[in-house]
Image (cartoon, rainbow, N blue to C red; front, side, top):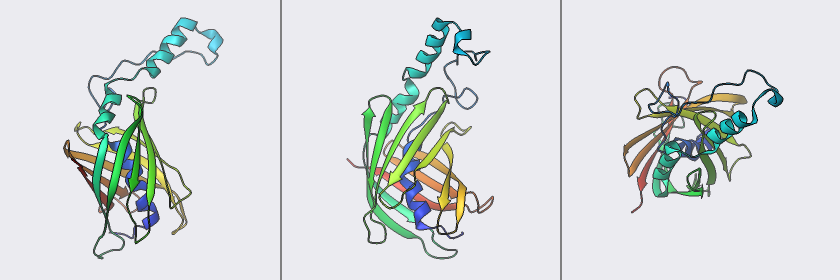
Length: 219
């Protein structure tokens, strides 16, 4: 397993997990029961279209649905254990902390606030996640107290209907890389136990896992 800089691991850890939290695809090709999208406009100029049609299209993107409701499964406080592989053959390093998820706008957007000490230093993160009805994807942004970068990820359920897979890109100052492709995978063994994985796609086809996080809901 290749070297995974702490910067990249720490930033993606909480941000991606939030976007992944208890999601279900609205894309008819990837999930069942997706709402039918309005037909595409034939022209680009709004003056070429019926105002009623335009309003209907806008309303279609505004109304929360069951895909947004599923975000509510993440609401609560979680004990988190983070495991990172920093170098080939080296034993993993571990860190423990707390993650709290709450609604920003109920039924639409959730926020996550994470506190996990890293190498003896405080590390706090803040993320926002929602479901974009127009893009038909879950979308997430993430910022934290150790970096100046904002991470953006998006994705939907895999074909098995139970595993959320999201993709994004990060810059890696330690290696000089820009827009390095990453994949995050979210699994839910139970309502009170969630698992998150971060994969560095620049490594190759196999052994791409550089970090995982285990979540246990605090009772």
